[in-house]
Image 1 (cartoon, rainbow, N blue to C red):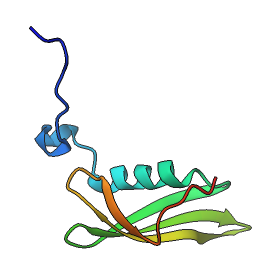
Image 2: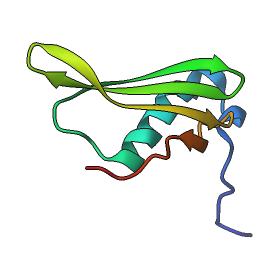
Image 3: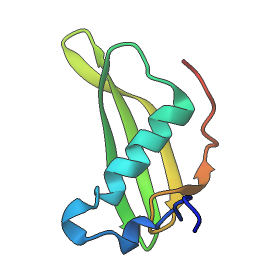
Image 4: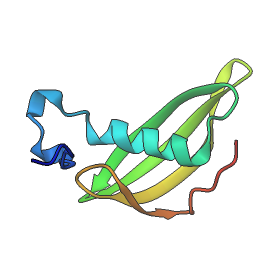
Length: 91
């Protein structure tokens, strides 16, 4: 008997254990980009189908500004398939 476990897709997990796909996408963007200094939040908004607008906000004095913005496509498990502009490691 094999002791290895087969990886399961997020969509196969019980609904109450699933992390929202937007949270997975936000973490993926930060993992690829790196964490900017004074990070405030990562906003992930569905646009249509599997496309999303992702804005990375940072604190700037007494306000917040968008430091990075991406239009991306992701699958049902939150894996980023394409991004415009491409996400590059900055931090």
